[in-house]
Length: 298
Length: 172
Image 1 (cartoon, rainbow over the protein chains, first blue to last red):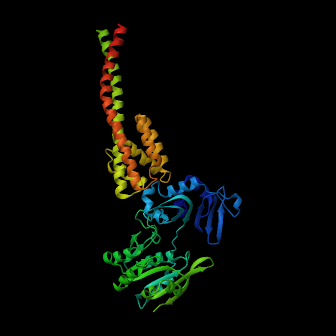
Image 2 (tube, chains in turn purple, yellow; image 1 turned 180 degrees about the horizontal axis):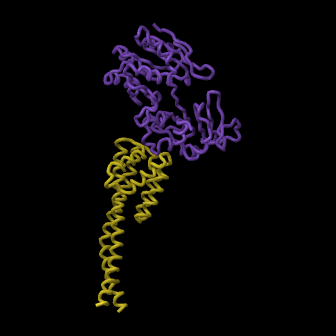
Image 3 (cartoon, rainbow over the protein chains, first blue to last red; image 1 turned 30 degrees about the vertical axis):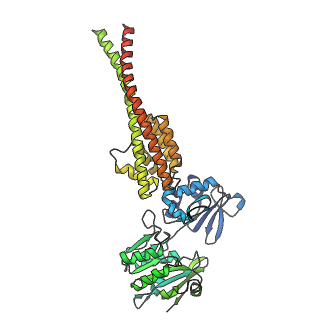
């Protein structure tokens, strides 16, 4: 059994642990549990269902449907039976489990003083399987160094095109010769669990786990003196100020943002591209994440 | 002389029997004390480090190995065997075994069982409130049992000797 499957199975409830025993995890990207609807398995070639016997099937009528109690049990199990310890993560709608995998939770929000404080009546769970592909960013890494000087780079892509995977590999590659800090606002890049990065992020990489991006970038520069700062999904209003501070301090920034092209990004976040030298466009080729283009911004 | 020795033996046996009852009561009392001390530690740790329960129990079981109540040690052992089994199930299983072993008073067992049923399901304020409430209830139970025990101990010892004497008289 591959280790990814083993780690995930250990964290499921006994019922689902049994059902998933014979499922092939090698190509699996997501597992979706939805209340009173079939459990769905998402691979790069499309979705399928989990049958009552624990096999992959395309026939909906024999698919296993999740009950409310099963979803609650599953969510509690993912939280190690300690909701209070994961409440800060649950407010954002997801938790990171052992192995760096991400569990997104859908349900009813509990709002206190205008802020989400919890999610109840869980109606859906999305287990997003995180994988690392060591070496996948080697081609990008070589293009980021011009005259042995690293460029500030922005990875642009729609969701599910490998932004985080490429960022993780870039951190691993550059940390061989540079001090790298990852500001991991959503525990996705390093997939930290209990303070331990679940992926290989390189020898000289520090992780600021669950730090707000802007605050994390400022803190990293003040206290960790990074050569390279890596962060995911820019876009908040205070990000630009932090980027300004980072680039002024001589630190190189590699970040990602949702979008289809530099024009898209410029339209949605005017001025943001000014902080970067290179834009890397990611997309999907043959249903797999791929580099679609690299363009110089200055 | 033989009769005298026999009488002493019978009286001594009855007294020892009474003493055993007293010991069992004391063991119950110290178990309740250990339980509320553990719950106090648990409430304190939840407030300060927001660690999930399995890790917290593991740490508490290791930290004070010399004075750790057997309930915590057993709970940790059972959690280790299957980290991802629902914690409430492990709690209830450990409690029922522990209660049987110590002969824990029913009120203390049901209190611990009710606590375990929902432990870990709420935010940390609710959790600590529940734990503190349980600590208070266990403490009150301990105090009242302690008072009763003083009376019971005297009574048990006196009855032990008296019944011994009674049996001797009957036999003579």
